[in-house]
Length: 178
Image 1 (tube, rainbow, N blue to C red):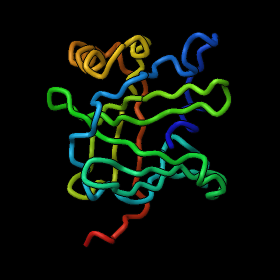
Image 2: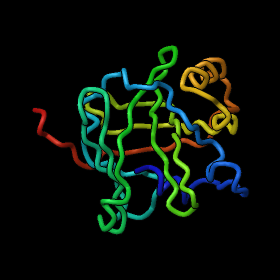
Image 3: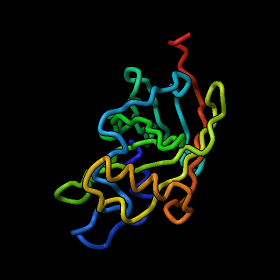
Image 4: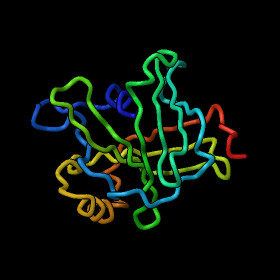
C-alpha cells in the first residue's frame, strides 16, 4: 500500500541491522483498531506529491474500524503486490493512521508500521486529507504498542518527531454507502 511509494520517497537505512526506513515501528499505536472509520474516506485517492498520473490508492472500508487500501501504479498493473489494511488511532484527541510497510527488496523482509498524523480532513465528505509523517528514529526501538503510544503521547507536540507533509486528494468517491 503506502509502502512502495514511501520506499521510493523516503530515506533508507544504510545497514542491515536497522529497518530499511529509519522511522518504522514494529508495532502499531493500538494492538487492535478501536477508532471508527469515516465512510467518506472510501474512494480513489491521489497523492499530490506524486507526479505520476498513473499512481493512486483505492481505499475501501473493511468493517467499522479498518480500511482496505490498494496502491496502484503503472495504471494498475501491480494490484496484488501492494494491498493491505490500515486503521486510525487516537492519542489525546490527535488521530494517526497506522500504515503497514513491508520491504520487497531486502531479505529477510522487514515489516513494520509507518505512522502518519492526521493534520487536516476536508469535512464532511473528505475530499482532501493532509498527513504528516512521524519520522522519529526511535520508533523502531519500541517494544510494544503501549510503549509506542506512551512515547507518542510524551512527544505529541514536539515538532522534532515529525517530517514532511503528504497531501491526498480524492478523485472519485464510492457511492455504495448512499
